[in-house]
Amino acid sequence: MRLDLLSTLNAERAARRAAVLVTELETGAQRLVKAADIAADPLHEALADALRMGRSTQIHFEGSAYFLTIQVPPVRLIAIGAVHITQALAPMAKLAGFDMTIIDPRTAFATPERFPDVKVLAEWPDDVLPALRLDRYTAVGLFTHDPKIDDQALIAALRADCFYIGALGSRKTHAKRVERMEAAGFAQEQLARIHAPIGLDIGSVTPSEIAVSVVGEIISALRKKPKRSEAGA
Amino acid sequence: MLASDDTILAQAEAWRRAGKGVALATVIETWGSAPRPVGSHLVIDEDGLFLGSVSGGCVEGAVVSEAADVIVDGKARTLEFGVADETAWRVGLSCGGRIRVYVERVD
Image (tube, rainbow over all chains, first blue to last red; front, side):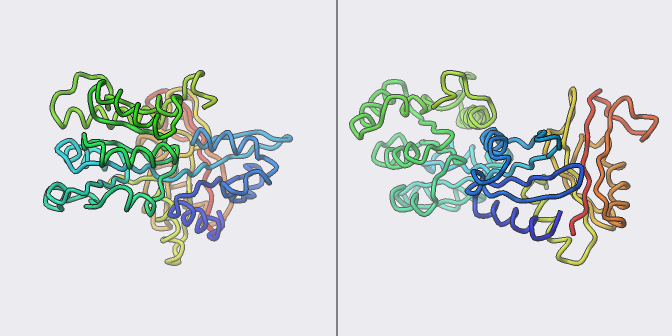
């Protein structure tokens, strides 16, 4: 691989942009295709498919074998609420490879002492989310129980088409949340994407157990193929 | 430290920029219960230092020694490992899977 291609690949990753390295296996010829330039590439259909799946793969095109090295941005987890569950979630998210940021405007909660090893922003979601630029490689978890705080992030996450949106709270709480989001103009299909109550149903009781269920649910949203009914969404 | 693809490719660039010979190995095909998915990387420098993995540790030794040749002659090559190749490589995948690994030099 040419150093300039490797360098561009690393730069694209750092900028949270997807890219594909195309290697013709017979000759070793390579090119780097940025996500924005895929339409112009002769292999555009295969590139788009592989990128959507987020998986590197080998393809055959007009008698030649190509390997597509797919690079998608590292998964981020934005957690709203510097609470007991997110204290347990922070080390687990790190281990799972998620780049985590916690946001909570309540300064008594959002302290570095309570969260020694993770980015914590003691700000309102509306004030800091625009700069964080949510994208489809971002997971958002809502943990404050407070609509004043959670809803700001929920609206941003729905608009950004984040791959995972989870919200803590009972079914009743969630029904009210859905009503508020419908009033804010979101369609039912969009709201159906919210995982609520948050986390896989493994009978979690303690904050740590709930954190495990949330990590599992995020991994499931990231890795499992969408169901046929959701595929077109 | 657990190495992610980020750190592996960043390390490849850093080693090359430091003037070292570097090879990048990539799993390009798997059959059966292969331990690491297609696209997994292993980066190797001229001194045999390496980061990442292409299997669960079963064939890394063979890839690292082949990488030394790739760093010298610059010719990319495809290696195949699996239960059937034990005589050829004296290494195999204990899981019974097969993998193909593309090894190229970073120029």
